Image 1 (cartoon, one colour):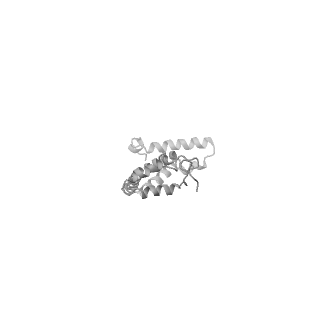
Image 2 (cartoon, one colour; image 1 turned 90 degrees about the horizontal axis):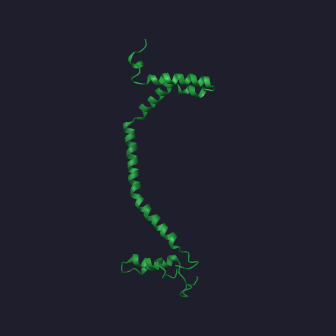
Image 3 (cartoon, helix red, strand yellow; image 1 turned 180 degrees about the vertical axis):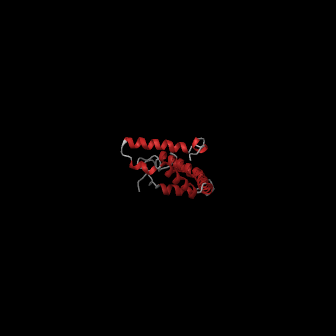
Length: 148
C-alpha cells in the first residue's frame, strides 16, 4: 500500500480509517472520533492520490440528510394522493361521467371534425357548433320556449 509523505507509514484505505474510528469510539463518542478522519491530522486526507475529497463527501452527506428529511414528506404525499384518488372515485362515478361525455360528443358532432378538409366545411361546422353551444346555455331561449 502507498506510504504517507508526512509520517512515512503505510497509508490506510478509507474503510480502514473509518473502521478504526468506530473501534476507537468505545467511550460512546463516535461522532468526535469519526470527525478526526476528515480533519487535516489524518494521514489519509490531504494526499494528492488520497481519494477522499472532503468537498464531495460534504455535498454527499448534505444530500443524504435532505433525502432523509424528504422521506416522511413523501409518505405524507403518497397517503394524500391515494386518499384524493379514492375520493374522486366515490364522488365522481366514472360510469356517469362517461355517459355525459358521450352525449356531449354526439351533441357537438365531434366525429364530423375529422372529415373537414376545406375552409367552407370548417365554417359550416363552426356555425353548427355555435348553435349547439347556445343550446347548452341554461338561460338560452331554447330551454324556455321550446319549438314544436
